[in-house]
Image (tube, rainbow, N blue to C red; front, side, top):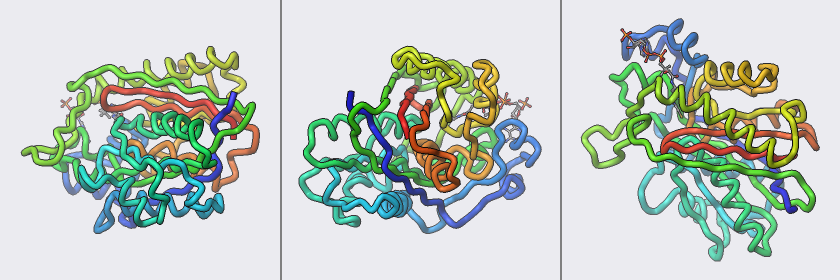
Length: 312
Ligand code: COA
């Protein structure tokens, strides 16, 4: 089978860093409450930068890191719930700004925080059809734009950022993907632009219960499909919503906590951007070695969930 390989990655974060103490000046909260309930210490918020600027910067870095010629791309997909506009999409803006070929699909996908995983699988479909060797997959968010800074139950959780990956097909390389969805407007609801309250509304406890079921579910499906066991996986790269969710899953599966990469302490929950940001950070730190088995798993609004198992 032709597996999907990540050739290179990039990330971009807005310059402005906001601490938990800064958040406690906006709503009644504390560093102690936020850190113990979520693991989050700081997040980045856009101040002038737009979501498409972050997407562009992350994409440029991924292309540079892999020395990829934009002419070799067969698709550009941006996973996001916070595009600058409904039209043109961020992916179309990138087509222009990065000088991508005009005869390839460029589009945004809204799959909540699972967007990057869905986008990987969609990119694989285009790669299988195309004569061009690479696809560009980006997760990019400006969640501060849809955050209610009077709601302490949500505003402390989110951050802005973007991560990008250039992917390609590779003969006889490991790859499996699982995707799912269950319509639920109560767990997470974002009314969107034009509405009186375009913010993220969330039933935190419902989402927590969903997440601690969805993540092990995806992991089990991928292991079953590939005949691998938990011990065979070198790194689990989960969506960075909450440290307690990740710790809970690691404990439930009896997997050493260190195998679950965590960086939500620095960035908060950056939705579709969290997994590619994590992958780029891990690559930069030399944590990812050729041949290692990496299991990425996401969950989020929709509700949606998804996992991708691939070889580095
Ligand atoms: N600071 C201080 N107190 C806060 C607070 C904050 N930022 N946010 C909520 N509280 C309060 C609540 O008002 C409540 O007070 P009360 O008991 O007086 O009514 C109390 O803390 C407990 O609230 P609760 O919602 O039960 O807390 P929790 O332990 O469930 O933690 C979350 C809240 C949001 C951290 C947790 O539910 C969670 O992480 N859920 C998953 C969210 C997620 O990952 N979403 C993204 C999915 S992609």
